[in-house]
Image 1 (cartoon, helix red, strand yellow):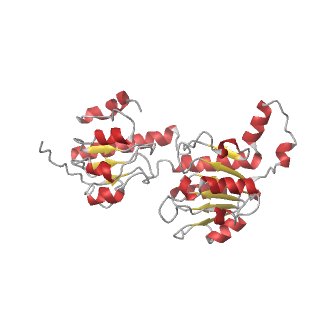
Image 2: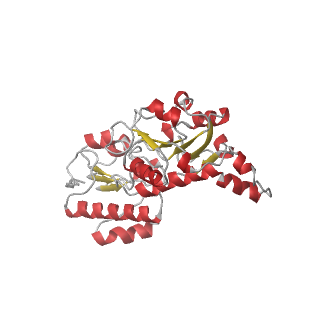
Image 3: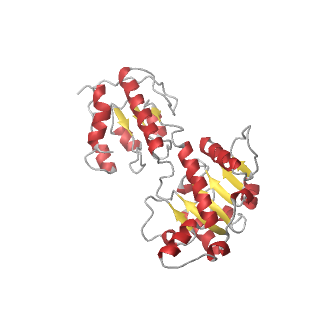
Length: 317
């Protein structure tokens, strides 16, 4: 977002707004010496680690303008007594709709047929030969049953698809199965897990090798859960018929990565949750939390157990 727009949003609160002069971690560290409140990077490219916490002696509140917490050192922030808030639920519908759209695309070879047509072909019979399937006949397996997983389940239920899920905690709704059963019986596996030490490499080569022959993989979570090279190997072996990927281990995905050229992959640039509506919700929640912090009111959606009433730290210099 342009700095001028940010000034319009926050200047009415009577605060002094600064933006790092250089968009890299060095620029972030250089800008932290005198700040009281930090708004994190929406894209996640600029992380906020222990060195950033140490460089911000007056930091009293950190607002993350997204749901994911994986590029922020919560342990260091909590040790420093800094309350951290995110914006939960803002992109639930957007991500779930992307997962549905991606599954439809792979099931009917939509973008594949589009590429063939633009190249001069008429793949009228080839698209069916690739395996055109109606979603009502496809068993959907959802890994992770947070708000996004639950919304994905609701959308596929509405289409008449049989849906099962695995989550670390069973939910009152839906059909729970163990991971091995989900992978070996699902026609489409949709990844909705958060990235944690326990879920990193969760879908490694061994687990991807358990998937039903000809299954589809849709990842709207984090690339570290299903490593890029393991996904590529499963595609090249024929185990996976196709994959829709919005996230990758390293972002941006390198220009020369083989996934970019694979015919059976639908690629997106970590934008599954980015709609005009979801972004507006992020902006609104972020601005409201900063206003509350400045005015001494409780902020919402604290994720690290610190008091939601932000106490400014005295500037002695």
